[in-house]
Length: 430
Image (tube, rainbow, N blue to C red):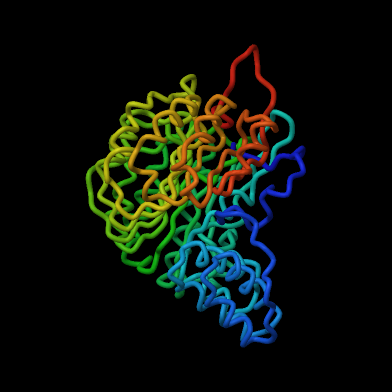
């Protein structure tokens, strides 16, 4: 149900490297005056050139705890690009201080959005999340109990042969003496037949009724459901706002499935940093309701618009308040993904004020082709971004070669080169 890593990428010196999912800019030049030891690393970190400072952080890994401390300190650097690079370097480390630094700095970062995806031909294969909110995902086992309330996102799900609802497991969670320390929860299939269930209302009710026990909850994912369990367009969510009202310290809310007319009501939430809505077809009502939310801390907004054939009733005109207004003043990442009118979005967005403040534009999974890509290529404001994600689109290798020459870091994994009877589709619909 999501994008994938392409297998036939053209070899290119500007092709994104493994950590480039969260980085912008060009490949750093070789540092001319190599200085020795940890003191040399410190001097290089004061360079006026961001490429030199990135190189220094990379080299700091050779100096054990002292070097690791420098990378952790870089999480507070004035440069957002250097902070993101430090974040990526730390994400590859297993030391307790690195893990703790990441947890306190950034509960959500972009690399996670690509790391669980795979594509085989035209069939999307999705498995349950193994990571959410920078935490490993594990099924909650009542016999084992809560052993890692900070670093683990505990998952609850049923299957078609299981119980109608996961109420018994959830009740045992609330009896666990560590429940007040749990920070992240993942909810998969909530009913043995999601097509006949009352949407995810049982999950919402559980969360609202459990707010006095789950006092440290920071991240919630409702809908970790795979293709073989339910099509995304069939998954319904009615009235998610009570979760935000019940958890004023919530930082991440992810929802998969959008078959609903009623998702949000106007509220203010001071702490939410990331809101992700994955749909095969987003209704106009839900998008307009999203605009009614006051989210002053929001940094990451990701919307999958989906297909007209599977419930999408949104148009480019419906995006105008988001693109031209100042709805979310601290927005860094804007994802308008999985759309059947990506070219039209591109044509509009290059003229809008939102590009002046965000650092990452994600228009992947949609039907962008060379016509839309050329608009991006000819727009100077795109070069002010740190990253442009056009993965899983219809952009050709020839156009990618031109895009990779821009200052912005262009991510283009899993490009699609086939069309069906001349039509181009978004990646996720059914």
